[in-house]
Image (cartoon, rainbow, N blue to C red; front, side, top):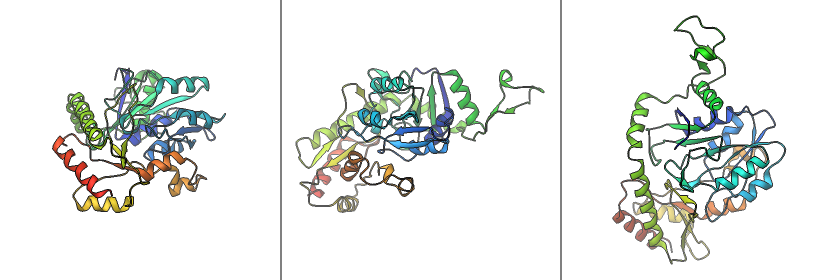
Length: 337
C-alpha cells in the first residue's frame, strides 16, 4: 500500500476495535460511520468507550455521503469511519479536508478494498487518514483464512496498536520502566489476544503475490455483469466514480420494484431453486434491535433503507467464469418478472 507501518491481526473486526481504542475515545466522544455496512464499523466505537451515529449514503455509489457527514458533526465528534463499500473508495481527499476542518481522526474501513486505488494511490496508504483497516476473511479479494490488518503512517499509533494486539504487553526495552533480563515483559495497556497466526500469515503472503491478478479478474467480472444488465429497466448497478479503481469485493444488483411484480423474498427463493445463491449487503445497521434500543429508528437514513430494499449481491469470486455469469444473468432475467 505504501503505508509506513502495518499491524496484522486476527480479523477485520479486531482491526477496527483496536484502531478505535488507539484513539483514546472517552465517554461522550462520538464517531460517524455509514449505516450501509457490517456491524463492526459501528460497534468498534462503542467497544472503545465512545458513541456512534450515522450519515446516510449516496445512492449512486452506496458509499457514505460527505454532505450528510457534515450535517452530523457536533462538538462531540472525534472520528470519521468511512467504509469503502463493495471495494470502491470514498472520496478521501474531500473527506480528509472535512476532517481537518473539524480536527477529527479518520479510520478508513477498507475491509472490502484491498487492492483498490483512489486517484492512482493504493487504498491503505493512509495518505488521507490516520489508519486504514483490511479484512482477509475467506470471501474477501485475498484471504488469510481469517485475518486482518491495520495500516498507519504514525509511529506512536503503530506502537500502541502492537501493544493492544498482544495482551497490552511489550518486550521492547526502550518502552519498559525496568528490565530484569531478556525474558522480561511489561503490560502497559489492557489489551487483547488479536494476533494473526503464522499459518495465516504464510497464506496471506502467497495471496499477496496474486492480488493484482485477483483485482483484474474481479473488475472484468463486474464489467461483464454491467454489460449484460445494461438497457434493462428492471436492473441497475452502482456507479463507479472516475477517481476509483475498485477491487470489487461485491457486485450489488439493484432491482426496480416499481416495474417488477415479484417481491425480493420471492426472487431469492426462486433463484435458490435454480441454483443461484445471492445475498444482501447490508441490512442497515441502525435498523438492528441493538441500535434501535439506542434511539435509532426506521426512517432515519432513507437512502440506506431504500438501497437495502432494492439490493441483492450477485455471485462474485475468482473462479467465476464468463460462462457462469452469462448463465446467472439469464436465470435472473427469467426469474425477475
